[in-house]
Length: 378
Picture 1 (tube, rainbow, N blue to C red):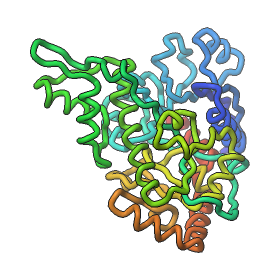
Picture 2: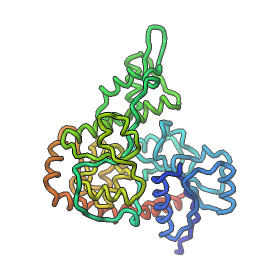
Picture 3: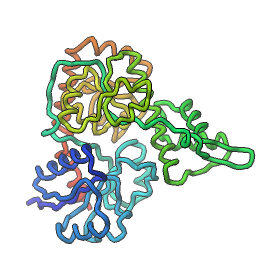
Picture 4: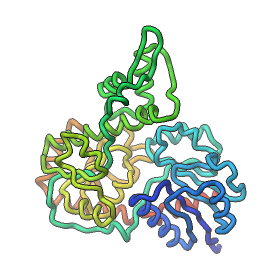
């Protein structure tokens, strides 16, 4: 059977170094399978997207964080694939209309969402480009590194927002966040649901927060802030030889600002960090972009343990603990950190194992193959 060459449109949300790297890798992945790719790192407005479809005649459009229902006049003859990497605090039901919807993140979303749509729904992990992230081992220069985002600290106006109010009962965001910090544990799966539970306990009423900045801060920013500060505080208890990379938001945190280095803009810079740090760190979504990039480059990686790591769509479906990465939690962190800092040979072997596994199973070409197979099921 002769495989048909597909025309594929790929559009990502923004023109940033990150999305440019992802687009390049995805494009190459499809092209290595013999397909033609056009698109870019900005969403097209409806009229421009219709013209694109008329001229390029794509078999399907693949977009990150945008679904077909957000493009009312999308051509009916063209299939649409949505990859929800960041919901930006929106309900998953807001992403509909696409023939295929891929999810990224909490594995429990899969079954819930499958029951609410006729689309083909599955989990899609990121990949990496072997041209950008190739195995290497260099002399390590420092103990710990973390490359990632941290939200800005809350300002007064944000803390003073009223989440709920009725005669005799008033709940500010400051109070809600304070309670959230006390109740959050690594076993919390849904930040938004935890917040709603707190609101109900305080007010005695079940409410929903409308889409917008307040909901995003409750559903996403609060969780990331708690997890990032918790992670860095753990690292600092074991070593002050720490390098932080990412947006300059780190400078707004007095405790962390002196460890901040810069924003890494290219795979070359990221590879250098991954390969010269004794221990690289990740927390949050298990199969994350930085996990695959770091492992592919030969970085030794600690990943925060979670309650669902063995579920479909989670990290242990891709890699094996203690063979490819080191899972940690607050109770065992200091012991694990001390052990691996003192054992470079073991670090190197685990890093090599992870890189081999990543290159064998987790490139963008592997992801492109799955996407095309799913498309042919429609």
